[in-house]
Figure 1: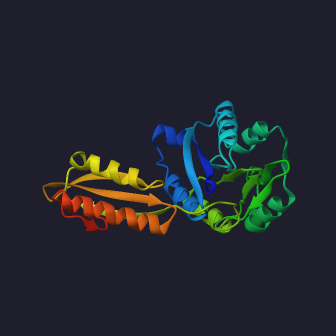
Figure 2: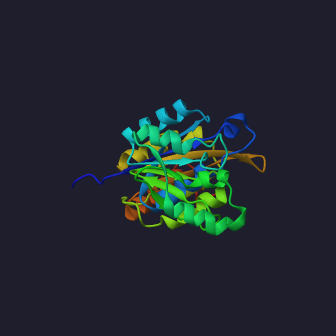
Figure 3: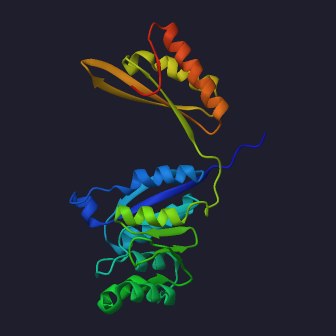
Length: 250
């Protein structure tokens, strides 16, 4: 049987405020989960400063390696919002004023429109717009690059407008098995289950709670039957080793 195509994506988080620690990124986890529903695997995430060369280099590197590239941040109205210029340079196209984006901004701001706010109608030539249901400024799609806002609520609204519109494969399914056991003592069990079931991945997440050591084992697969079989094998193996597994997270 032919191997199932795995569609991939990269995220480039743009902003000095992220690197300085003044702002904490909240978009990576949300995007990863959203992509999984679309059947796309997030395989890389980078954080880069508000510097033209750094953004251009990241965009070109990620475009060469992934089916899709998402950027967050740097598409606002201020002088240091240079993501549009950087992506245009990476793609070798000029920056133009998108008439539909300008109309959106004028409707949203009315008499409060300014030249600074009109900067948010600038796009790399040939780009399409991504609807923004939260505020007036749209996101941008050009080729396999998707430029989203940095504000989480706006980012999530833009992603909602892209639901079902990207080509992808099968989503990754997951199931959790928990046990009050140090992960180091069951590592051979985890390895054995992975080897028995090709295409299965098991992540181990230890914790300390109620004065005891435990771990949650998250099993991932693109096939429900394989996922359920691996969970059953893992619980049987843990029980045989004298541990009491829980079908679900502790």
